[in-house]
Length: 331
Ligand code: NAD
Image (cartoon, rainbow, N blue to C red; front, top):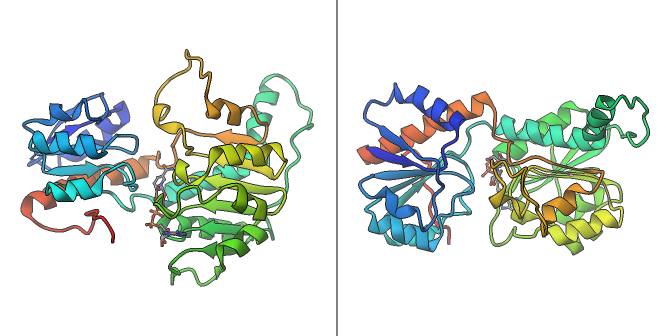
C-alpha cells in the first residue's frame, strides 16, 4: 500500500514514522504541499492519499484523484466537511477518518480557552512581561456553580461536560441524540441552552443544518456576559454577527480554536504579511477574544493515536475489512 501524504509538518512525519515500524506493508511519501485540485494529480501511482482538515477535497480534487487512480482518502482527523463525499462514492473512492483519537485533547483545550478568556490570561501574560503588575482589566468570574451549555455531546462534548462537572458547574446540553453515559447532564432545547448558559461550548459537527448555528438571532437569545468557546468548526459561527455581538458587549469572553477564515492560516507562519481585509484581525482587536490556530487536537497522545488509526485504516482497506471509520454520505 503506497500512500501520498499531503501537507506534512515535521510533527506529522515524526509520529507517522514512529508507527510505520508496526505496519511493514505500508509505504509513505511525505510531501509539504496540501491536497487541492492542482496537487491531486501528483497522487498518480499511489493507492491512497492522506489529508488533513484544511485540505481541499471538493468535487474537482476528487475528480483528479479518481483520474490518478487513487482508491482511498485517509483523513488524519475527525471532521470530514471538506470532502465531497457524494463524488467520492460515485467514483468508488473510500474515505476513512480518525473519529475519536483523543476527545480529551480537544475538550481540555476548550476549557483552556474558556478559562483563558474568563480570567484574562492572554492579557495577564503580556502585562506581567512588561513589568505591569496591576490588576486592571483582569477581573474574571468563577465557573463554580455557573451553568455550562454543551452543544453536541458526542465524544468531545462528553469530555467537556465531564470537565465542567469537575469545576462544580451545572451542565446542560443540546444534541439531536442524548448521550446515555452523561447521567449528570440535563438535556434542554437549543433556545433554553442559549438562555441559561454562562459558558457555551460548541462540539457538534459542521453540517448543512449546523452552518451558522451561532448567528444574530441565536446570539440575541444568550445571556449578557456569556463566554462562548468554539473548538469544533469555524462555519458554526457567523463571524460578522459574532463581531457585532462582541461590539454590543454581549460576551464576557470568546475563545476560538476555529473560525470561518482560518483555512489560509491554519498551521502557517504568516507573521510577515499584512492581513488587511481579515476578519481574524478584527476579532483579535477585541480585548476579550482569544484565538488559537486549530490546535485542540495537538497533544502527544492525540498525534500517536491519529497515526496509529490512520495506518490501521489503510491496512484494513487493503484487506477489504471494515474498521467502522469509513465516512459515507448520509441521506
Ligand atoms: P462526535 O461525532 O462524537 O459528536 C458530535 C455530536 O454532535 C453527536 O453527539 C451528534 O449527535 C451531535 N450533533 C449532530 N448534529 C447536531 C446538531 N444539529 N445540534 C447539536 N448536536 C448535533 O464528534 P466529536 O469527536 O465529539 O467531534 C466534534 C467536532 O469537533 C468534530 O465534528 C470536529 O469538527 C471538531 N474537532 C475539532 C478539533 C480541533 O482540533 N479543534 C479536533 C477534532 C474534532
